[in-house]
Image (cartoon, rainbow over all chains, first blue to last red; front, side):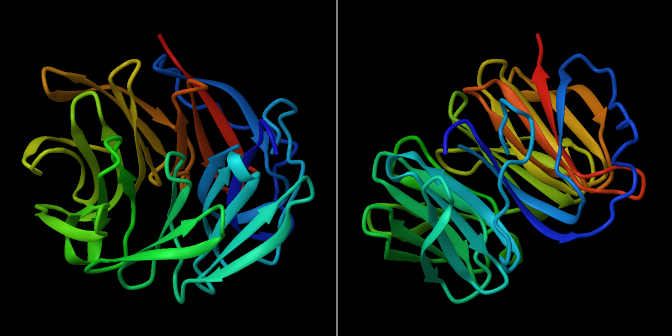
Amino acid sequence: MKALFVVALMMSVGSSPGMSQAIKKPGDASALVVEAKIPLGAVTGRIDHMALV
Amino acid sequence: MSLAERRVIHVIDGLKEPQGVRYVPSVDALYVANAGDGTVGIYEGPNYALKDRLNLGDDADNIRFDPRTNQIFVGYGDGGIAIIDVLTRRRVQDIALNGHPEGFQLAEDGERIFVNVPTSREVAVIDRRDGKQVAKWDLRYHGNFPMALDEQGQRVLVGFRSPPRLSAFSMRDGAPLAAVEVCGDTDDVFFDPKRARVYVSCGEGLLDVFGRQDGNYQRVARIPTSPGSRTALFSPERDRLFLAVRATPVEPAAVWIFRPSP
């Protein structure tokens, strides 16, 4: 389990509109620049914790 | 999720309100705390097989790990932190608190734990040698959920939701040192030692970035994200901030990866 990322989702699986839509860009502030966006699939609900492996 | 492949590669389902997650490399195990049934699941190996389940009773929440002692710390219930030995997978100690612990941090000195206890409006200071609370810092504001340590500056950073504030306290004695307004519904706070910066993620749909200068905090940037996206993780080793973006009517759920600069 190397080089992985773990997300705790309190999720429900279902239709999630907009998977094919472009994700809105956050602000242009240079202090933090968006490098990538990893889609989580058709899940909804609160995402409460994360961990790196 | 594979960071290299940038995709979801495995899903563990059937959990009861999963909360804290932590991977322990020394035993190749993933610990998952479940608020719904008060258990901690231990998963091992390439197939993430459930190897053990410890019952803490109620509302298992945040997880921390000390690699020096091979111990997992889990906040739970109406006021406790359970300590689990990862080699034996046994609960070896409990620390009593005055209420449910939210964000907590293990100090680098190996002797203290700082714990946010919002229901009693305090930061509890734990002496790890005997597992007892040895100090209580009374707080001016409410809703102290996230916490980070600035070991460089010997400061405990606490995020409040009411009113929305970031406060810094002396790690030595809890003396309040600075406070600054932050975005609403704050849920995570991180200190970036390389840049002496603080990152605050908020459910309001904002990321606040502060610089520590002369003991005070100046906002460097306020970055719009997405409503409800308040869970984040900063890795100094990878020099990246990860933000969990929940699904909205117009956007899918995703993890956004931010690169700090300069």
